[in-house]
Length: 553
Image 1 (tube, helix red, strand yellow):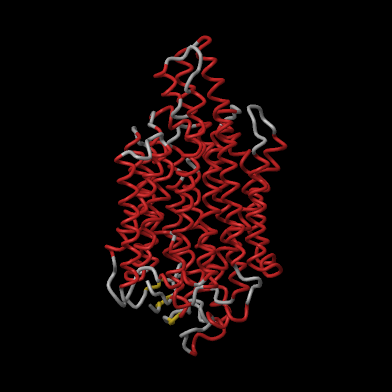
Image 2 (cartoon, helix red, strand yellow):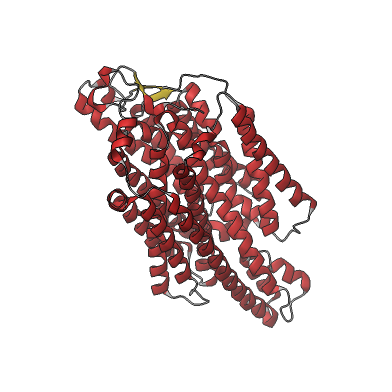
């Protein structure tokens, strides 16, 4: 579908070509603010998990849902709201997402039980799904030249790293002074600023509206993803692999996803143009994004619990310990454009995975006592490696997709990002639980029922130990801490293996960065002569046809 874009704000009322050229950088700033809003909420809860566990006392499965229902709902609905934006306007959907984000944040902040918090986090996921598709699709539109787009993606990804840092730091600071619900209330001022600024500065854009809007297909994808992840969650919570509920969730999820793929292949106007996956570079980039996010979010959650519950750090101290990871990621993102031009996508993504795997192996040296030097080295290497991987994968994915499919490519990229985050928490959390629980099966002096309860999580083990008191309580606390460290080591080794698989997969990416073809294919495609030298940039006052907004969704 061809997109129609109209400029908004004061820039749009000035007719000079120079001002039109500057508009794309202003648009990038607004898109980065939108990304920051979503990125902060994806990580802000990590340092608050122990406080939430103590206050709401969720079960193991409920705790997993509290943390990762947000990215899973967001991933499931990205395609739906991306295509809705094609119909009613992407800026309009974006602003509605801001409003819903603020309302859901207020509900989450004052939740008095786990069920309400899970529902509020789900609504946050809906808001995030309304916000996120605009970022990459508009970025691809307004930066048709591949060299400039690489710089823009570097800034975009660095902002994502800033969000990852701001989340734990703000969460830690707020937990030092307020209750855990305050970590959600920080979204409200961001929303209040983003609503008027986005309405004033962002250009409106819509698709041509060809073909029906496949709501059924989007719901099939959402149901399929939830079914598969629910099965993984139940396995991680200690359920039998042959349990009826577990098998049913996995079977229904796989069936719905298979039906979704079949439906998209048959439709004249699919939500997702699956033919893009026939391109090795595109499909490889998507897989690399999933693997990188799987490692990042899962490890960050486990690391936050290790720092607080094993080392006894405060939430603010935990956020500060994680800061080097994000600062290193920011540096890699800002340097990514030059690195990609010099080394090419294949070397960049493959080396990023290898560097991340090395960082994970370094972190296996973490034990029951603090080792600040090891943590610093491990987190810096982790930030550099993951951001290098994500930058190269995102840039290759967007550049590999034809301009006519930019919207669909953006939706797939954001879906893989959020899906990797959600599955990472579920998968690595499941590995962690499976390795942790057996260490508490037979602690001297501790009743079997208490041992079983302590096996749910380290936080619950500490609560049981405090209730038992005396020698049994001390023995349970020590055993739980040792079991958690053992589970952490197993999880890190599994993660390192997955990262090495990603390094091998990255060998399918192109060796070099072809700037001439990307620029010629994107710049000025379907643009009229009045587009001038800034083809692909929202034109002042008058609507302009932009080929980069074409989409086969």
